[in-house]
Image (cartoon, rainbow, N blue to C red; front, top):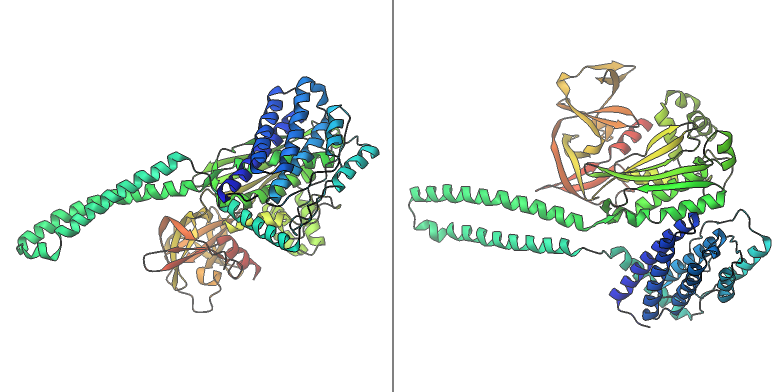
Amino acid sequence: MQHNDEIFNLFILEAQDNLNKVENALLELENNPKDKEAVAEVKREIHTLKGASRMMGFKNISTMAHSIESLFEKIEGNIELLKKSTVSALFFCIDWLYKAVETLPGVLELPADLEEFFDNLSRGIEISVGKFSSEKVSEEKAEQMPSKKSAHESQESEKQLSALVENESLRENTKEEKQQNLKEKQTVKQAKTDYLTLRFDKIKALLNYSNIFTNYIGRFRYYVDRLSKEELERLSKEEILNVMEQWGSQIAYDLRFYELYAKQFQDQVSSMILVPLALVFDSMPRLVRDVAVSTGKEVDFVMSGKEIEIDKQLVDLIQQSLIHLLRNAVDHGIESPEERRKKGKNPKGKVGLKAYTQLDRVFIEISDDGQGLSAEKIKAKAIAKGLISAEQAEMMNKEEILHLIFKPGFSTKDEVSDFSGRGVGLDVVAETARRFNSEVGIQTEEGKGTTFILSFPINSSVISVTMFEGAGDIYAFPSLNIDQVLFYAEQRINTIEKERMLEYKHSWIPLINVENLLGHQGEVSERKENIIVVSIQNRYYGIAVNRVLGENSVVIKSVSGLSHKIPMLSGVLSLSRRDVMVLNALDLITRYRER
């Protein structure tokens, strides 16, 4: 069946929203099976999905949704049917629906024993679940879902579910049909990436600004006409001076208001690409639940701040970082119930996900009340793996040692699990933070727990930068990295062990000429008026520059194509006559220290 692209994309977005709400309701029911509102929520959202998929002609999705709805009609009359094993089995039905929606416009076949499966659930027969795997979809590998195991699963019920899953397959297509489905699927993915829902009040505000700008264009045209050559030729020299003075002040007055409206217009447009963090946060309770069930741990998961809005372009990057950190929090951080009892802790661990804003950035904290990080264990492991030498380890502060966990291939875990121990994941988190001129903050106490702090710009295109002259050009640092700007002539500077040092906050810190920092081979300019102090991993570094030009909030152009070739480059901002490179201070200092 052919579908209108806009309606098709809207169905996918709404179906995913329906499934997300069902998933969260099931999480509530797993903890409180008698929650009637959660039961009603499942019925309401599944019924909506069933009707929409039937209207679109997606028969298999409609059939699965109808089976779940029918089961919940029976559960409403007999809440005792809703056991933990039933919820676990339903989670896999939701996974199938997610996969079926993602497969569109391809078709995912229903499990062969679906009717028997739901019949057993409706009669209260326990069905435990094992590892769920999927067939290839449109010649692309589907991601494997994490293992989900019940503590009391039986061998017979394991076989029953395995048979159910093994029968899952795709409808056979000809080679031409497969290629066409793959092409359509890629188009849908791109459409979903570019699709954005806008509130009407935001669009209305833009229309209002359009009217304002139209009025100002009329006013400026009037000024141009009055100051035209023909008009001025009729006037005497004295009259021309009077006209220029009168109209000059009027134009300046109007320009000030025009600039004000232009700034408001820019802010309004920027707000249109902001989406609530709920797009990311709402999928995390299920992730935490699955890892906890698989690792045999009990976890109380709490979220806050999901109403905060952030640039839609950052959603995927934030999601990947949170997946890695939350998996680690449950698998690495939280101890088993038995171990927690021995330590005098509540057998149920706590994992938190919190977002809040400061100025133009959003901060996200991922916390757990588990065993915490051991700096000594991390240091020993890093030396054993050859990541650092024993001499280097002795010179590192605690913050620098803790950040070794973000090195590729590093893991403190001796055993590899489905979720961690391979030394991959945290390096991705650190790399994502560096792309936005930030670090991953770590607060930890052995035996008490760990908190990771991520920081992202609310709008990835508009940032505050400090521009300066140095190394024969004009550059800029993101202001986020700058602790203070000093006057060079007023500072105490000394040479200690052949290295220039600056006295700053009652201690000596390295002072680096900007030419050396950028790796320039030419002569170093002696004319230095300012020192920019940056903070990295709780250490300060002074960067001597010719002159600081000022601080501005600017729109920067992406340099994604160059970022791999020039890691120290964060972006480019356009001035009236030239482009200015925005440097990544974190990468520059890190590379300088490694020389």
